[in-house]
Each structure stands twice: as C-alpha cells, then as structure tokens.
Length: 108
Image (cartoon, rainbow, N blue to C red; front, side, top):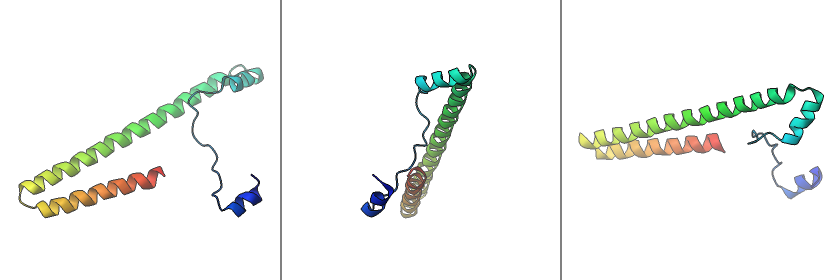
C-alpha cells in the first residue's frame, strides 16, 4: 500500500518492529561472519544482554506489582477489621483502578 493510499484509507501508519527477535537469524550471522569472524559472537553477546535486561525488567515489574497488590489487600483487611468497611472499599477500588490504568497506559 502506497503512502497516499494509506493516508486516504484513514488507517494508522504502521510502526517499525522494535522487538528483539527470539533467535538471531543464522543466515544474517553467516553474512556478518563473512565480513568479520568476530561479529557473530559480538551480535550474540549483545542479543543475550538485551534479553537479560528485558527479563529483569519484567521480573522487577512483577515483584513490585505483587507487593503493591499485597499492600492494598492488607490495607483493606486492616480497615475492615477496625470498623471502616466503606473507606476500605473506596481505597481498594481506587487502588485497583489506578493499577489497572497504569498497566494500560504503559503497555499500549
């Protein structure tokens, strides 16, 4: 589809693929090896580094999200226990909505 057809159709412009591939392309690594024998090793090392960073980012987000959820639930139980169920419901609902809104805004 040409740029003009794309503008007329009203569809959003396609975004470039910015994700790290799951496995480096062996054919591309062979071409890099033909240029310089140490390039495939450097590319694989960089690939491993980026995957490790992405994994650590995901695990950190999971741990923080779990801690926040646990804190919200503990606060809810505490407020109900001391006799404030309406406040507990408002705080838990507001906290849960803000977490969902945060996930939605960062992952879209």
